[in-house]
Image (cartoon, rainbow, N blue to C red; front, side, top):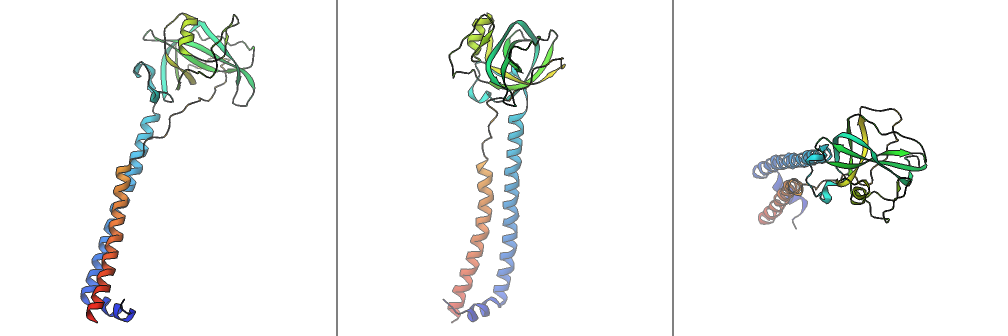
Length: 239
């Protein structure tokens, strides 16, 4: 290993100064190329997240629904069927108060139907079904399966299962159900909204652009290592 005085003597030569200037230029260039790829990684992530959370019409989701469809924000237009309404007992509100969920069949403009959790109500509270056409927005959920399905003459059930509800209401339902978040027009005496169980998960990380960013920064470090080795080897040869 050459002494520091020998390294300093080598570093002050015109060749070494020009090499150092080139190194600084390369490191700055590689740094900004890496930053550009890093920013692009974040832009791709933001675009993917925006696309995954954008609301889509329930009629645009192909049947049978796939696992990745659940948790998506969906919109639907139609009218609630007054006879096809049940209550799900032993459900909590957002404030952890005991009560019931109201589940209704929404008849879409296409003639298809889907079960909709309209919201939470205190046990036994009376909430009429809107008669007019409505436009709703909510989160698509898979049928529940943690309890056996049960219904009684009071119109109460234990779980929300689209297949069982289809049999109960004698109507063909789309897979899953919608947990309603918004309704237009807003009617009086609306049930309290409930949070969905499943929400859209995070999107896949764009590894390719991430590795491109890391690659440029590694190149910059490699250039520094090459310069230092060149300086050390040159100092040895001079001695």
